Length: 572
Image (cartoon, rainbow, N blue to C red; front, side, top):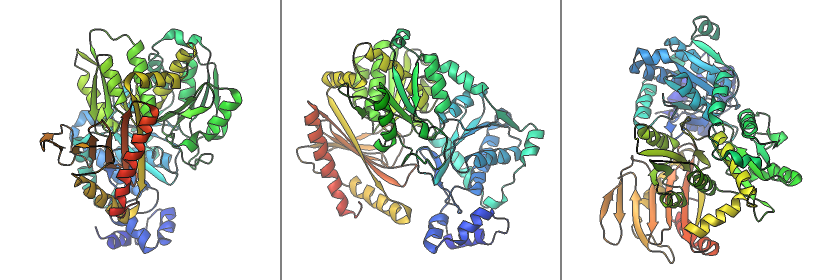
């Protein structure tokens, strides 16, 4: 696409939103090229990007274009789908409420009813709402844990799951068929309401969700132990549902990080609203130390990811990784939940620790890998619904997302908060912390240790660096790592696994993806993949050692060897 022609179209459009026009007039040629060189696309988390003018930015026109594509996609499914409607929710980010209403205005032109939450709601509640209201689709306006200048548009199917590959492709074809984003018709809010094409949602869905949430408790007696919990929603959506959920669980001492409790599109009191980052816990740790709390929890703005900090050696708080937290929850479920006459099944992504697989196998279960993206876990859950011999018990990924019960079909930090509180109470009664139990798991299964290194590579030059780096590593059949022997290379573009020693090739029975994974003979591994939601190239590392020190040594060697290769492609 010629960015100059595309930008000129916007510059000469008489009815352009005044705020966007002002921003557009202040942009230089580099900024214009970034904003207009291509249409914003769907990744693993849907459409996400920076706010501002341009076809590669989040604004009312690109949202309308996406909503129009969704309307055409639903129309293609038939009259019943149109009558079912779409449920829309939004987080507190800049323009989120505006974008949510714009979706309804576009869908209404096509006679599709929209159920719209009056106030902010978490992503897992949107997933639940699709299932509860039996709508044909759902839309969540959010950019998850991205910085304040971002927003996004995530589409959910009738199962409450993010669109899988083929439906996503079909939707994208509909969106791409819309050549003029300024020509997308809309109905006014008053017309939507008069024609019963817009239904405002308040507490009914919340209450139904809380009722399901109350059923996930495994050990009712665990809550006889009094615990103190510190929680921060990081200026996002989780405050009310986490408070109500923990209260009905029986938590009597719940304290909020008050500065971070109010919804705030600028995330004023946190550097980055991402519970994967240690800085997000700074205020929670201070409060936890002041009140002698047992556990600290933080959710990202749309409440699909959770971070947990637990007492370590009965003293200071240490933040659990997503891999560690997932393993702890999985172990607790398989150890304490009654599962009769069926085989438990756990799903994890290919970049998630193998500790969970070992735990599952120890309990007689099946562990299955999927590509990164919770939609792939949701697909697997759907496939198990009619399987009387197997039962879904848990799904998780290393990036702090997990699902305990499948009444939601996406990551659910609220469910996680409830099960974590129960676990803390259970282990406290045994004079243990979550870290004490984690140490027992390491002693039993081996010291698994993982790490992530991300390269932030923005713009057109960044895209080129990502492509060059992936190409370079994809061709490294003789990758050298001190003290390790390369066992195999998995290329998810060709969907082939190359066994180094035998020179054999095996098929990979997962969808095509721009991912390369190196496996070593001692069980260590490294995986590269471009992020589907951010301008980043991610390097994942995993090792298993006999002791914590052994694992740390292996991890350091693996990281240093792999990352030293970046100089050869000019990425850093």
